Image (cartoon, rainbow, N blue to C red; front, side, top):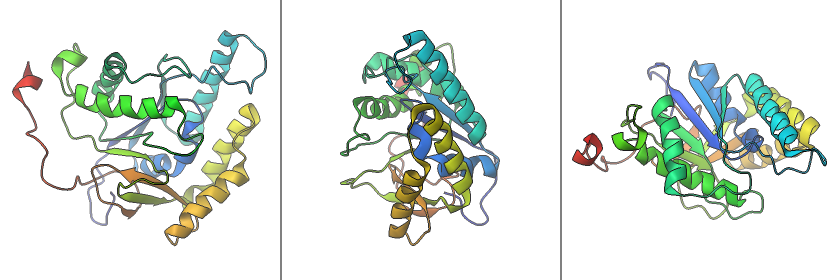
Amino acid sequence: MTEPGQSQTPQTLLVALAHPDDEVGMVAAMRAQVERGDRVVLLWLTRGEMTEALGPIPAEEIIRRRTEHGRIAGEILGVETRFLDFPDTGVQATPEAAARVARVIAEVEPDAVLTWGYAWRRGLRHPDHQATGQIVRDAITLARIKRCVHPLSPNRKPVPVFTYRDRHSQLPALAIDATPYREKIRELARHYQRELEFPDPDWLEDRLRAIGRHWDLEMAEEYDAWETRGGIVKSLLPVEIQGPPDHPERTREETL
């Protein structure tokens, strides 16, 4: 997490989600890195083609429009955007799926990943969301293994995980002050509301205000910190992984 006196060496945050619009609750996290001078890559595993918000039009046209929605979202946020072609409502956490995402991780070489975590509430617990989070977390490990990502080079540096936080989580809670990013939050919400009729910008802002009250902030985004300490931070990166190393940086298996 960013602290006074820390290096401002540019780093890379990979945000890996299931559908275009999943990122509406992560604007502060992404913009904090952009404004720090870091690279942010926003990856969607599907194109959200099962939506009914666009009416009874062919699937190919929905895919085209949803791809454009993502492109515009990237312009609003000032981040890179990418899509994979997993099926909407059919994302499954298989070894093959993790290997595909592992190749993205090997290419992007992120310093941290932000994705879906465990969830209990309707919407958050969409099966695509749950599967995406598992795929991404598995992919971080597979990206370390040369044979899994060949011909790319394995990414063996530590990649701490952050996820959307939901009720009942026992992981350390981490908050980012969303107040400085209010206009970008509303701009992205308006973009998706125009196209998909969700989310209402006022509803989203009220939700962030409710989270902020728990942290004595006007507005906040809240995440689970899987390998780092909790608390209020200015940005997810740079980060210090907590505790002793879990394993050596390289193992014989990974060098094969």
